[in-house]
Image (cartoon, rainbow, N blue to C red; front, side, top):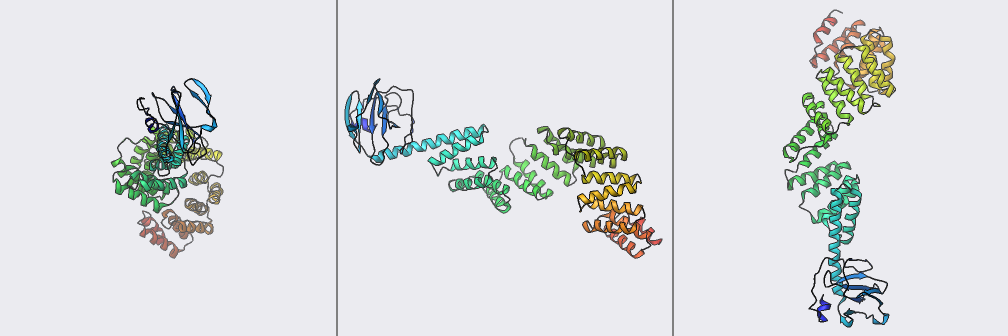
Length: 474
């Protein structure tokens, strides 16, 4: 525009639209306008030839990288002779007139940088739109291009970090988000995303530091409470997780539609024996995602603990419908029939179904051994319980049940090692001490029997009075 005005072309109406100007061979184009004039520029510092098209209607001053000297001029095609090039100046063709115009390469550089900033922004905007459409990989490419053109573009670094987190590339996300933090040191969401990336890479201390910084900047940032709750959940601190979840629900501004959140809250409530509360949370999870196996299993577990046998069976059947190859639902129904209905035959049917899906599954083997013991089929129970222990050598309940089987068949010397093993795994196991007292009474070992009774007194066990009478009778 300056060149045109210097040439006395000030009367030409100018409408300057956005345009992409670049050096070093980056080509830009604009279509759909009629060309009234053009000039060719060759800057001092580059071998790229720049063909400048002027339009009084749309966009005067569009630079177009051109290695061919073919051009359109007033509807006629021509070729600019090589001898018309001049270093450090341009040749303006306008209405058939040739005017030499000196200008500085610095002006080109200024316009070039301005054009690049606009282009970085356009890439960024395209990336944001793709991200909103959940096209994460194409969005990443747009953000990368924006950063190539503007390395200090904090917003683009942040969005790229977000996308990398979403795609599971947490290490790369940390790199991008740290760059975003340079320009966005007081933006809470940068610290939240950094905390999330650190959390996913098992850098707990760094994650907590970022989450706390986020809360310093924005105390009601609800997502932080949810993620900190998830960290407690992963550490099996279910009481701590529930406290964080309560803060999350108090601060979140929209309806929670995250099925996994409601599942984890329900799981924590089951773990802390709030079975009624667990059912409320888990039913919300099921309403949001009906094919999530674990939700139905936890619902079945909660109903079993609430002694709602029909509901428990219903939920376990739902779980089986979601994944017939999972043994857990079959075991759950087996437990309902075993513990709530005391129907041991029906219980074993379901345990054998579990074994059909997963041979040698330890809980199914234990359940069958338990049912056989309850039917006084002790010799049949022993191999099932031994196999369960072979599958998991820290299975406390199986050691107790096997000790009972040996006691019931008069194999006292075999019973005691099983019960002692159970107590080494869990010193507070009352059933193991109960059966140990019965074995010692049979062996007339009053001192050993009394020792176990005393241990039960310390545990405030309901078995104390019954067993003390047996010991006193030795």
